[in-house]
Amino acid sequence: MAYSLHRKQSVGVIGAGLSGIAAAIRLQEKGYRVQLFEREAQVGGKCLTHDLLHGDQVYPIDMGATVVALSFQKVLSLAKEVDAPMSIPNPYKIIDKNGLISSLREYYWRGGRKLDLIHQFLTYLFQVRSFHKNYVTKTGYRAKIPYLYRMPFAQYCHERGLSDILPWFDLPVAAWGYKTPEDLPTWYVMGEVDVLGLIGLFMTILKGKSQFVKTFSHGYGQLAAELAAHYDLDIQLNDAVTAIRRDSEGVEIESRSGKAYFDFVILSNPQLVSILADPSPAERTFFDDLQFAPYANVLCRLSKPIDAKLLVEPNLRQQSRIRMIAAPYENVPLVVCYLSIEKNSDAYSVEAIVERDLALLGIELEEIHKTRIWNNYFPHFSSFNGYEALLAAQGENRTLYVGAINQFEFTEASVSTAIHLVDKHFPDLHSLSSKYFSWLHNLQYWFK
Image (cartoon, rainbow, N blue to C red; front, side, top):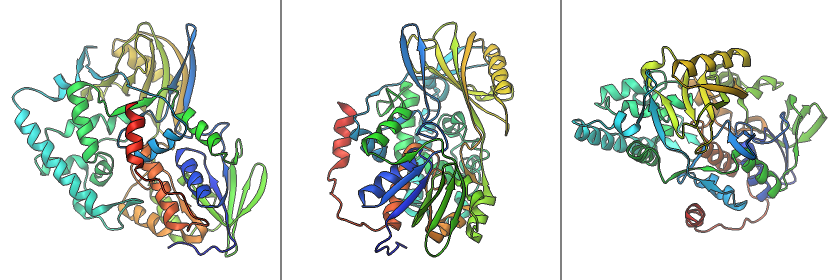
């Protein structure tokens, strides 16, 4: 339920990733005084961009969030405000165990089975549409989801005659480190690959890339920084929060710089539950049930360009830990290797894996420039009980949870749920200007 605030107008937002920034912008528009706390030296969180000099040119390279789709309406609305330039990324291809590269169409759209593939494609479209209609809300998923959607996605596909299109989901799910369809419950996968997502995936398989998927030319990290400046957000960088204390009067946030007092707090990193002075039973339950899938991005220079986002063939997974090798620029030998890692891996061990796997794949490595380890990658729940507890904790004890735990971890879901959660729990303190036909303005921005 929404709070009745009267005089209370201050909110502390912990974490200046894209969801924290989106929540702060929305709160500011609604008339609240907002302060953000960020433990890193820059804003963006998992929207991390590294600028690398190659030759006489600097190349912005995303090492966290990467793509933006036409369906990302909330992200596009924010990006439009700062006129962030966009570009079409390199196509996706597949590399096999012999180092041979083939198109997605050759691998996934094989002759003799096309009618079966089309039938399964349409079947999934119908089923995922029903799932979103009945169990997805603007702020996440509903509190009750049938067991049908809680079973592993691979099992769901096999039982419903969707086995032929199951390998398609290697691109949007496993390749980005979100575990495998054998591990992930169906409600997580359907939360990401909805009707528009599957249509975009189908176009990508046929053509290698879609006109409805782009990248930000200056990087997601730059977008986050420009949004923070454009909206004049009050952000304390290098200021890790060490304790949060709540009572009936307000919230005390203790950080490296001292103590600050607010009427409410928004947490964009679920791990911060561990520093709550008195977590509620619901908060304890969802925090105990929370899991992560550690991941690493390694920026490398190769001996020659590859001009593609290479998916590593699934049957190589037993040999190769690298899931994808993405070249962001044509004719430039810079790539980002994506790989799942063990918890608490260090940079030395991760880089050793990359060197070994690139050699296994027949790709010549010249130099490793930067390694980023994400131990808090892909927050998800081991059972639906954890998600039910999250829903119960939202708004409790003057606390709201935004970020990737409300829906599948990608930028639009994080931004959209943050905005809608703020609208649900915080009433307007003054009238807001209406933004009519924002989708039409987004289309103009996309195709300009």
